[in-house]
Image 1 (cartoon, rainbow, N blue to C red):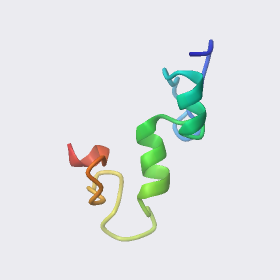
Image 2: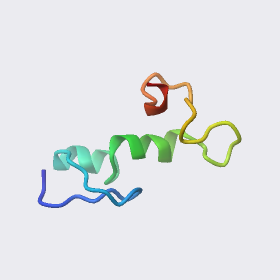
Image 3: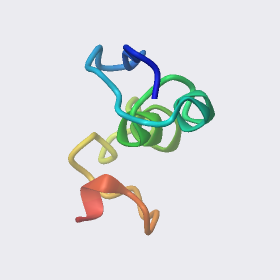
Image 4: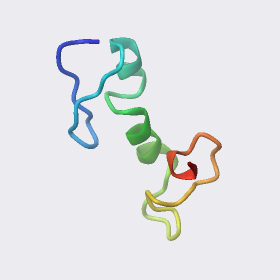
Length: 60
């Protein structure tokens, strides 16, 4: 992990290895999921809604 990694979506510190941080486009895995798997402009699929993906953070 580098000294300071900041999430491009939420602005909070990300504690991932540099390789994973880059893989998730400089975001938390959850922020990456919401940015790319949820269509937040579509009714019924907000951040609190399960998008149907087994790995969806909102499914828990």
